[in-house]
Length: 195
Image (cartoon, rainbow, N blue to C red; front, side, top):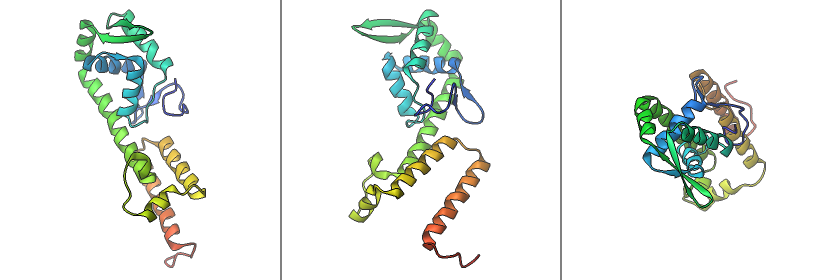
């Protein structure tokens, strides 16, 4: 399973607080998305990617077996459209969604919260990439820097993504690191007068 963007995290997607996004959870989430409207497999992948702000991008090797299972168990049906398959929820699928509505809504809202947090982190490190307009040329030039600083910003963003979601203790630790780095940058290499 590819799980997180970049495929670094093995067989299960951590959904925070030790919870894993299991195959059963994924099947229920897919059913809930099909309950909204019929979709192709690729659309389901893109929907999960969008709702999580790019944090969770399931591979076709995860999505299509889950859809096949839903079809084989009568929870979804398939309509062939040329080379594509359109997946639709069945009445028993709707019943399964209703029976598990609370868990599904919890999982989807967790995905969306992760997406909002990742969008904030992305804007913080590269506002132009996400469509925000800078007010003056100096800021635009700063954000276009292609040197070592940009590479370091990208490394920091990757490190934050790898550690996310973080516990309150981990958030405090990361915040302290970032604050110390900001202070060192502001001091311009001069020793801290308070040290």
